[in-house]
Image (cartoon, rainbow, N blue to C red):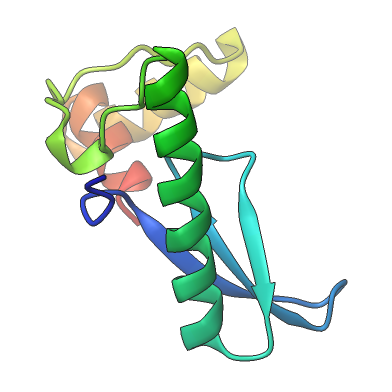
Amino acid sequence: MKKDKFTYRVTWSEDDNEYAGLCAEFPSLSWLAKTPESALKGIRKVVDEVMRDMHKKGEDIPKPISSRHFSGKFMVRVPPQVHQKLAIQAAEFGVSLNRLASAKLSQ
């Protein structure tokens, strides 16, 4: 199975005192190891095994994030007070509310 297009991450787990290998497309999976390299190798192996099992059972395998299309649009709901505060800031900076929100989100 092809697993190299998925989004992998290795992070230190203070609770486990080991490195944790994670896969964004399979958030319920993880692999603990003493080294970051072993954590990455372990999570890739687990993802491969899970994908093989899903394939055998006819289950849908998640599409890699890197292969998904993103429009650049999404809706965010905020309390009215926050909306008002952001609108005032945008006006003071002389930019649209959209531009202000985008700048704040990209920080």
